[in-house]
Length: 256
View 1 (cartoon, one colour):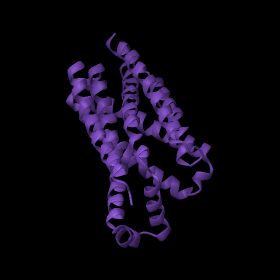
View 2 (cartoon, rainbow, N blue to C red; view 1 turned 90 degrees about the vertical axis):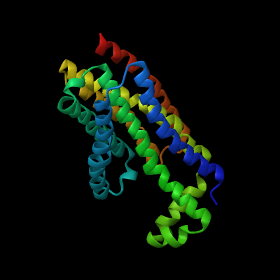
View 3 (cartoon, rainbow, N blue to C red; view 1 turned 45 degrees about the horizontal axis):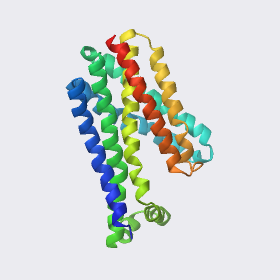
View 4 (spheres, one colour; view 1 turned 90 degrees about the horizontal axis):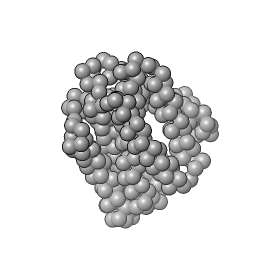
């Protein structure tokens, strides 16, 4: 059985992710003002670029190299630079193609809120919701007859074992993670906007390298070489705090 506390923690992550997006919009609107078009373009851009285009590449690569778990260094380099190139070049293209009239701090901030806010929602819906459904099915005794019957036995057993072993803290860690990740996405959005305004593509290259460097250590957790989730969450928190100060610095560059 999956405890009610664990199920409640899953629901809390979903609710928090939605509220984070809404709160970020309202806070930005009150402090600076919100530009609707960059907000929407940032949200749609994240979905298309990361959840469609980038994932198509991942499917091809992982299918071609099924033993990637045995090579965390190569996996980290690939994953980091794939994310960096798709996201930062994607932002750059969207700014110069669809947001020519919104190339200012307000537009860049709105874009970053859209990108990072929808990221929190999409990740919660795509990762936590399935586990919530599976947990409910385990507790009602329908998991084995439905999911278990439609998947290979070892895969179904892995899903069930994972859910039974993951406690409340595993899911609640996602709350500060999404909070700090939002600052990272805003910082990257503003950095790319600086590249657009100053016509210096080297800022995009800087964003790509920084993005890859941030994502690289995460591969060691994904491949099982780092076991402690709190180490990863502390790392993300530090990057998030640093991103907050970078945002303030970029604000001065954009406003003057």
